[in-house]
Image (tube, rainbow, N blue to C red):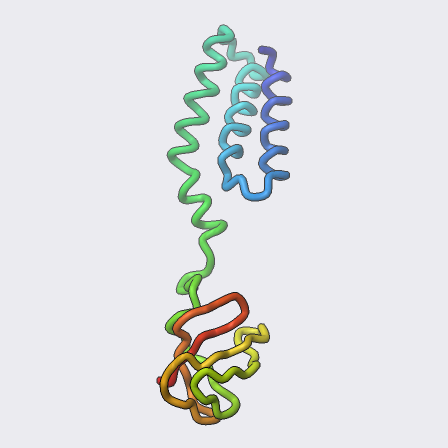
Length: 143
């Protein structure tokens, strides 16, 4: 394949990575490998067609298995200390909450419905522990 064919292939694959919902960088290294094979041809490194495809495959696999996981964790891994689940966190209950009762409150910038799933009432102003999350409902118990 000509060098510009590899460049077009690489651009198409990299574009597909951009438009995919969450490709998780699977196509990134394949596209970069195609561009690198194209650059090698542009710089005058001549290879038979099977050699180009072999270089493309080797570059794709080596870069994928070497760099993808660390790149994905750096970009999508989240902040240090961030937990995906809210279970175990504490909330301040603004009013007395009997067992089975609900109240609305703001927690981390979002309005939540909070339900007391414990057996003891929670006094107004007390802290409670989140035991589960069900949609926009926090299930809490007295601490």
